[in-house]
Length: 204
Ligand SMILES: C[S@@+](CC[C@H](N)C(=O)[O-])C[C@H]1O[C@@H](n2cnc3c(N)ncnc32)[C@H](O)[C@@H]1O
Image (tube, rainbow, N blue to C red):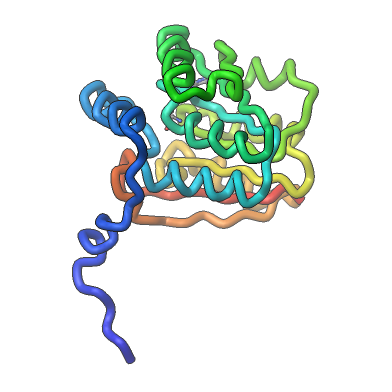
């Protein structure tokens, strides 16, 4: 049997795709200001998942400076779709708007300022893809709205499910028959933090 690669974390780091100069700038800013962004590996994963599923209506919870949103809005370029992204901090939402403009993706992104749950309750449209990345203590609280807003066959991706505050969410999504899900404990280079869980859930 072939041997495993020694020191796999160092080895796989070299394959992390590098983004453009704007994304690198946002990564440096996030390091400096300790803004917990997804980093280039999860960014690319989101892009691939959204593009492969041809998602046209994408909802993001937790915009921050627009880093993850840029990957999702880029996938919308393929489907001629639109990203709706929710952020409670007006200051961060303003920065995200500038960054979507710099990326040439402002026409793909609709940033809404407010509490994610309150904003979702007012929504009537359905989505093909939801990315969940707000404070983990709110994950369980928004799960019902994700269930209502995501079309059957749509994909929910939840970041940071390795956090203790995500425990109730992890249990609920495993138990509810409206979802079919996997939780992956992964090494995610340049993600905040690098060893964490990701949940991929299909709305059934
Ligand atoms: C982990 S950061 C998002 C990082 C971003 N997705 C990225 O990777 O570039 C979480 C963001 O969610 C926002 N947030 C936290 N709880 C929220 C809530 N209940 N409603 C709306 N936004 C919230 C925070 O202000 C913060 O900007």
